[in-house]
Every structure is written in C-alpha cells, then in structure tokens.
Image (tube, rainbow, N blue to C red; front, side, top):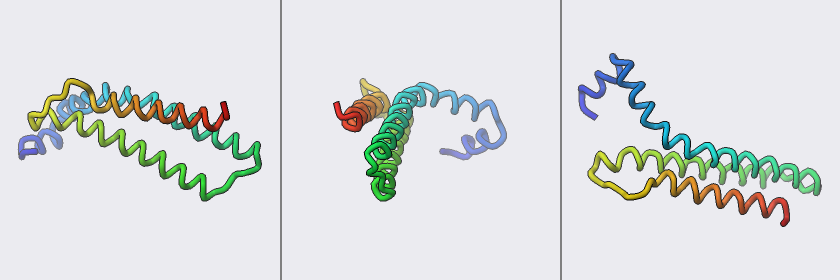
Length: 116
C-alpha cells in the first residue's frame, strides 16, 4: 500500500466505497456458512437441554471451534483479494471452496446433533 493509496483511503470516500463493494461476492459466500453455524448452535443447545446434558465447558469449546471456522473463512476472503495482486491467479475461488467445505461440515454436525 503506497502513499497515494493511504491518501485515497483517508480523503476520498468513493475510493473506500469501491473497495468495500469488491468484498460483496466473497461476503455472499459467507451467508450460508453463518446460517449453518447458527443452526448447528441452536440444534446443539436444543439437544443438550432436552437430554439434560448441557455443560458450559463443552459449549465454550464448540464456540471456539465456530470462531475458528469464521476466521478460516475470513482468511480465505483475504487470500482471494490479495493473491491476484501478487500475480497468483487461481481457477477457483478459495472463498467458495472454503465456504462449501464449512457448510458440508456444519451439515454433518447438524445431522450428528439430530441423531439421524
């Protein structure tokens, strides 16, 4: 990031808005991930309360795992945004691949919680 980029970020709001708009495709990939994470948490809580097996330690561990998933997704977005500027062009979106993996992982967790 050069001096002109910093100047544009500070003094030219249109420049900032244009950069934020570049994130929209990657952020759209995160919506199903967040929905599935939310479903997994809610269904896990329902299962824990109905089986009288709720433990805060297990809840805390699960929430740390969910935070790790979200950070992994954010890292994928950053990679998708920065790799082309380094001359690394990939034929597939890293964000899309990570989002698909996370959604499938959460579906598996939901199925495990339901007990199917």
